[in-house]
Amino acid sequence: MIVNEVDENSPLFAIAVAAELAGMHPQTLRQYDKLGLVRPTRTAGKSRRYSMRDVVQLREVARLSSEGVSLEGIARILQLENEVASLSARVRELEGALADELLNRPGRRVFAAGVEGEVISLKHGTRTQRRTELVIWKPLTDR
Image (cartoon, rainbow, N blue to C red; front, side):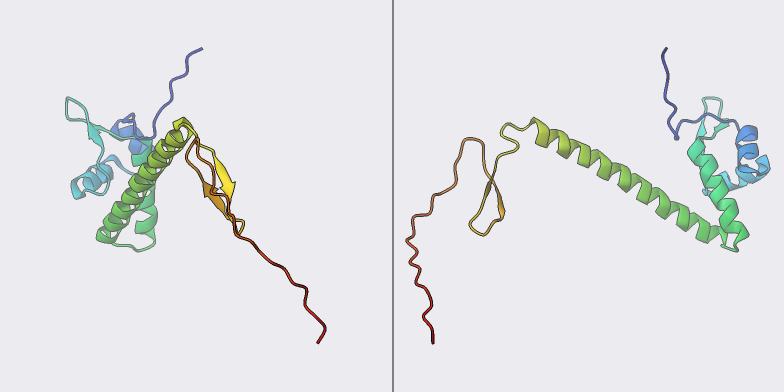
């Protein structure tokens, strides 16, 4: 059985369906698009297609609006939330690339203990320097 995953950013819903999912009138969605609050993708015929992420943002607009936030304030909040989402995705992408790099690097897990117990990373095939100092111990005498 083949299962296709649907991305939250996939433009799936026509305006009437998105409006119903968001609990709004289609004209409100057109107005929000015109104001730049939620911008759906467009088909070749110029009709709007909303993703699940767009519907979630429409619900957020309705919630913020009901709490008395101005449309300008809502636009700024959505902009910042979109930036956070984009940066979080980039961080996940970089973490994955770093993990892949660390796993694929030869000698990726060679460590030694330092003099004070700290962990020292070593290059593959190298050894730590052996210490050759002489330490003399004298017991304390009673005073």
